[in-house]
Amino acid sequence: MNKVKALLAGLALFFVAGTANAQSMKNTLKIGALAGPSVASRNASAAAGLNVAYQNLITPHLGLGVTTGYHHHFGKDKDVSNTTLKNNDFGVIPVAALFRYYPKSEGIYVGTDLGYGVITGDDKVASNSSVERPNGGFYLKPEVGYHNRHWNIFAHYTKVFTGSDGTIRVNGASQKYNAGIIGVGLAYNIGLGR
Figure 1: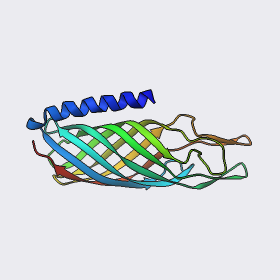
Figure 2 (figure 1 turned 90 degrees about the horizontal axis):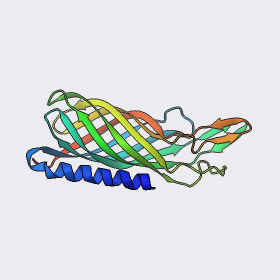
Figure 3 (figure 1 turned 45 degrees about the vertical axis):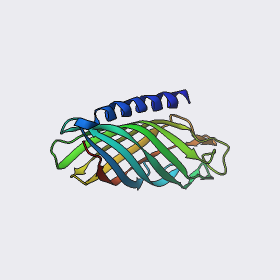
């Protein structure tokens, strides 16, 4: 939990530094949605979510900011060593820094979100297992997309790295815990002035 507090304090300082320079830089609120199938299809089938981000365009090509939201992962049943695991749904709340590079004022862009993903939901990975789900981990969301003044349309890979936490072992076989998706998203940009 101390790591989460340290990360939140760092993001707060980053936000304060960004808003202190807001009079000379373009500020944007990004409200968006994303969806996609789960990576590796272990304990979840797909995810969908909403994001809210603040971006400070510090040069015409570089945006920095903070982002959060909620991504809902849909659990799926999985057969492991003749046992059907009834995996629970879970959520991810990202608390992350946002980095974007815009080569032109309209067109292709690249970026990533880096931070911590808080995992929420049932305490157990599966309803028929005693293994506890992880609480969170390092959050990574690289994306590439198209942008104009009002919209961002993007492809993304979103992952919370949990190590071996949440792995269920059954008769010598195992199901690793997965909190990753690959998919598409859309964000609407609301200008907050200079």
